[in-house]
View 1: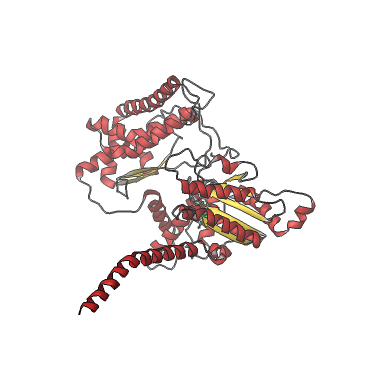
View 2 (view 1 turned 90 degrees about the horizontal axis):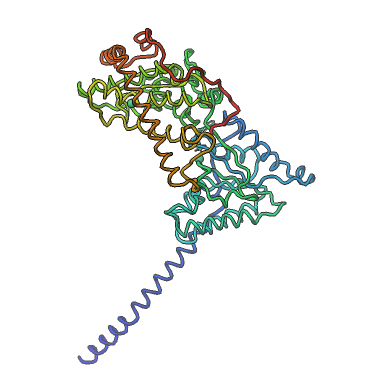
Amino acid sequence: MPHLGHLIHVVAAAALTWLPVLFFGLICYLLWRTVQMMPRVKPAQLRTESSASVSWSDVAGAEEAKAELLEVVDFLRHPKRFERLGARVPKGILLYGPPGTGKTLLAKAVANESGAAFYSQSASAFVEMFAGLGASRIRRLFKEARKHAPSIVFIDELDAVGAARTGHGFNREQDQTLNQLLVELDGFGVTDQVVVMGASNRLQDLDPALLRPGRFDRQMLVAPPDLAGREEILQVHTRGKPLAADVDLSLIARQTAGLTGADLANICNEAAIFAGRQQLQYIRHVDFENAMERVVAGLQQRRVVTEKEKRILAYHEGGHALMSHLMGDALPVQKVTIVSRGQALGYTLNLPAEDRYLHTKEELVDMMTIYLAGRAAEQVVFGRVTNGAANDLEKATELAREMVFEFGMSEIVTSRTMRADNYSLSEETKRLRDQEQARLTDEAYDEAIRLLNKHRGALDRLAGALLEKETLVRDEIEALVADLEPESHASETVGTVRAVAAD
Ligand code: ADP
Ligand code: MG
Ligand code: ZN
């Protein structure tokens, strides 16, 4: 059957020629479909659903930012009132501050209180996208917002696209997205009732182009809460939770200096979990204390510590505790323990009794000496050091860096900063600067060694008590070291000055 054979041959040849073409066509079609579908974000997806539930009363402590944002709410509610007077309301508002201070929460509250349409996107979502998609999302976001004005566009985690371009790891895609954002920010008319809000953890890292006039030119610091703020936040997060009569929120607030709103929310939740696990009807103060320790020191983990390790730990933590006592007010010790929690094998809980923004150079040196006293105690007692002090060394190094680089607290300069990003410094100045930083920590370490040798008896008492009880609270520590005279370098402390913000 020659004919059939011939036919098969012809069909096969045709298939071989056309199949790749067909295949290629199919791929092209699929790609086209994908690209068509991707940028089509429905407005509903752009909206943050949860914003509806956040009100002003849910945000506590951030009084300054709240007061400023009230203006924005007012503008969005009564735009005519401002237009009539020719007032130009800031269009680009940037909330910045450490993670967990309530920036996202504030933006949601503004949206809810102003009744404006709220378009929210996290910039980190743009970064992972296909080429050009980040930019087209931004375009779409602003188009929707204009259409539904008065409205708010909120771009969270702005650092993700707005990181300064000088850094490495910056790609073309991020650049496109950032450029599109700049175009949109510049494209607003005076009468557009669209307010753009952004949130970022660090102002310094943002591309300066974003901060120019007409863009994110109104910047608000959202700082960790002060004492009163912390108490308010605790109240917000215990609202509707059954509390036992002994719960003292103001005491908890006093013991949580430095923690953010998110940490405090976490503590309230953990406390409820502690109580729930014991099938209690009410949350007791002790549940909050447990929660606080858990949040501060990481999750409690069971792990075996050998007797030898325990002795080293007892002297290490005893060294911190003794030095805290000797240094007086710098960092009063609340509690010391060799019970391991999370990463830390043991820890000394130093919580300042009051919020402080100003510290003298001498107090900072005192703090550094306290940080380094753990390792110094190991050296004094065992003649050897362990890897258990890494975290302490980091804190001391950072403090010394701040003192020399930023606070002008060195022997070589007293009235200007020598930050790492200051390129006008000569190589020689930089060398001296780094030397100064090392000198500060070295001297603090030597001082710690000297004092621990001098008060070796007290150190032995503290370590002995720690080995026996594992945890010592403030009064027990005081009783063991009551006879010692303070050795602090800071003769008097500077009072609290609230007007100075931490920056
Ligand atoms: P940020 O955006 O600054 O990182 P978030 O707004 O995401 O912080 O805060 C996380 C959570 O922490 C909030 O949902 C809220 O439960 C709690 N929180 C943070 N700050 C405050 C605050 N000032 N008042 C009340 N709750 C807060
Ligand atoms: Mg946030
Ligand atoms: Zn330590």
